[in-house]
Length: 100
Image (cartoon, rainbow, N blue to C red; front, side, top):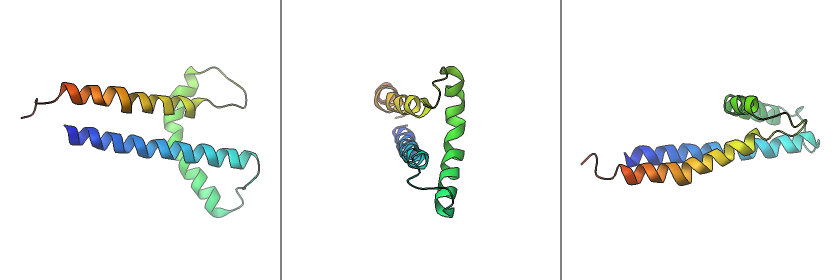
């Protein structure tokens, strides 16, 4: 069971960094520091949006509209931290010795 929880933690960590990179790339695109005429930037950004959009969509339905500000990545990062620091350790403590 601990191996499964460690795999979940690794996947959450990867998702954390995908969201961070996508947010930074989005900011750089909005301030026109980089542009989507570069094929690498366009493919990277569209790939990151493809990965994160299914996660953001339900949260965007719940959150009120803040105009140009998108708080969905922030909410997802908070949820990842809650799962990683509170829920997974609680599950690990409660399942110690169950599969021996």
